[in-house]
Each structure stands twice: as structure tokens, then as C-alpha cells.
Length: 296
Ligand SMILES: [Zn+2]
Image (cartoon, rainbow, N blue to C red; front, side):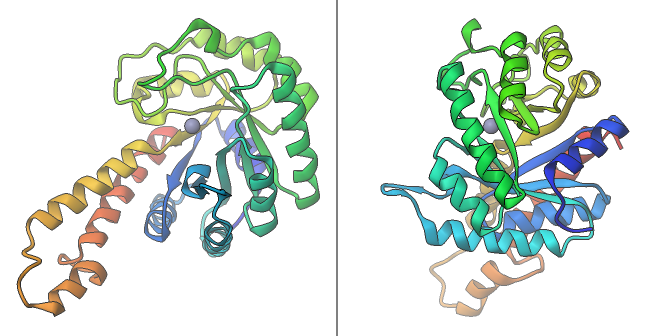
């Protein structure tokens, strides 16, 4: 099965009337948990890292980006289910270009803070570069609010602009703002279903729903019907991981002189392994969400 282009995963999703999750990883363990979850339920998955994992004071940490790209590529190629490997949410063109060179098979350019014209111009550049590497590009139109930046009506994706944007750029998937919120646990936000339908009718590419953590479960089948074939999920995974680590650590006395048990806490595959348990928690959530998005 192994590494497949994003466009193919989304095409299959469209045919089968389901959505595929992108579960954002931050290290080897979280990536491994994601691929294992997908293998356990035997379903396609989109794995990868967010640009923030690599950002530093000089732009980005190239050694980290390259190492993570090679690791992710290797793991995707060895998976028993179809996997796409994405570098998510970067507005930095040189970082995206580097990501293509070193192993990601799709990238997401986030030009949502720019004017429509600038967003089109830069997204086009990313798509042109991506063609050389046979990499697929997702882009975003409309700004996605967060708890710090509440929704304004000007943030929402305009269906008319989406049509122009997709035609001029040639992206394979479009992230939209339709009431979805980044990093939110608030399940009461309202999703503008009519807007999704209009966007999909005018811009005929698969749509992407960022902000999966707070997205109401019961609306998943509704938005899939309207053309959303990819969901992005991150915050809830990191939270579950940290919570489990904390629980595990609170139970341990790290001051006692038993160094063997210290190794166990980090490396053990059994009950004693704190990391193992934390990644297991991540894997369980991902399995549940794959079933939800995939409607299996
Ligand atoms: Zn996002």
C-alpha cells in the first residue's frame, strides 16, 4: 500500500463518500501511533507535521525538518494502508520547497492572512514548484478563528472567491472557514452547511475541515455529503498525550535509587512504560476518529 498522493486518497474518499483524517504528529511516537491506528482499522490516513514543529529564530531548523521528513517517508512507505505525508500549515515558501525536496509528498500552504491576489500568486508558486517533485498542494481560503482570534464574518470563505482561487492555482484540496475553529474544545460552534455546499459547487476540489478537535461528531456525515473529504486534528491528541504522561509521572518516585525502573518508564513496552501508555492514548483517539470520519 504505502505512500500515495493526497489527490488519490481524496479521490477514493469522494467515490466512497467518506472522509480521511490528518492527525498531526510531533515526534516518532506520535507518528507511529497514527500509522498503527490506521493499520488496526485498515483505513487510509494522512500523517505529517505542522510547520511549527520546525520553526526557529532563523526561520526553520533544517536538520530537524530533514530528519523528520526522512523518518515520516520511511514509515509511510512501510505502512500496510494508503498514507499521504504532509507538511502542514506553512506560509514560508522556502520551507515548503525544502519539505518537498526532503520527502513530504504533499504540503499545505497557508496564505489565509494575505489578500486574495497575493494568496493566489504565492499558492501558484508553491503549486509550480510542487509539480517538479510530484507533490500535491493544499491551500486555504478564508481565515480560521481560534479561541484568541474569534470569528468575524470577513473570515469566512467566499464561494465566489473559492472558484477563482482553485481555477487559478490548481490546488488539489482547499481548506475552508465555515464556522470551524482551531484549538477549540467548544462543541457548540455552528457550521455553515449552505456555505460549504456553495463552495463545493463552484470550486470543484475536495474541501478540508481544519479544527477537528471541536468539530461536532454528528455533523461529520453532513459535511462529507457536501464535499469535505479531509479533517485535520491536532490539539486533542497532544492533550491526551500530556495528560497520560502527567498521570504516569505523578505515580512515580523519581528520587528513589532504582535506575532500572527509570529505563522502564521511558522504554518499556509494558504497563511500566509511561511513554508507551501516552502514545497508546493517542492511538485510541485516532482509531475512534478514523471510524468517525470514515463512517466505518
Ligand atoms: Zn489547521
